Length: 263
Ligand code: PXP
Image (cartoon, rainbow, N blue to C red):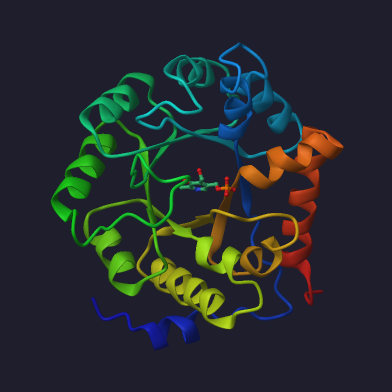
């Protein structure tokens, strides 16, 4: 598989005169459900929020059905599958129940994530090395019914290579370390290297976690990243400026980053 890290970085040089390809924004609406679940009622409805996001320019909707059902519920996923007019990205752990649900509802994309009940949010990438057999089996199962598969991984060379080896269509690079260490160069460099390697291996490259209008620029500017998944910051910002404006604001920041210094 003769693609070296060095080779990738050289091979993916993008001329400043070339515009970067359009980058998709998928909005994660989990935390609309978090607010609803605070009262166990019916509002605010994440499915209605998804429609607002789509009207504001979201290219897709992401929802994470956690095993503990702390925010998104099964019924939300069923309704999203029926109403999303863009593309639905179902995030889930590798369990038989989740894979069966995906096979039934057929979202456009499934992003496989690690899940620990005690965590506050998805705290690290999927350990593809340790769980290779299970990840390969899940990817195979989803691909058999035509679902695009993405693996949420840390920006790590071995994880990128193994993601390709198990047959995933895409990787989503965990941007948490980048987001939690503002001003530190190493996490951004790790994302750049992993994105370049993933693209060189033929994987679609996505990224997400902890991104906001304030820190999205440098990640959005990574040429190979074709999709960002952003949730908490958009839903939080919506409290102050509304959901429509919060989506548009991030979209603009992404576009600016991909156009910066290019003409
Ligand atoms: N991508 C994945 C795989 C996630 O698990 C999450 C968090 O649910 C996100 C993106 C979005 O992260 P945030 O809510 O911090 O924007």
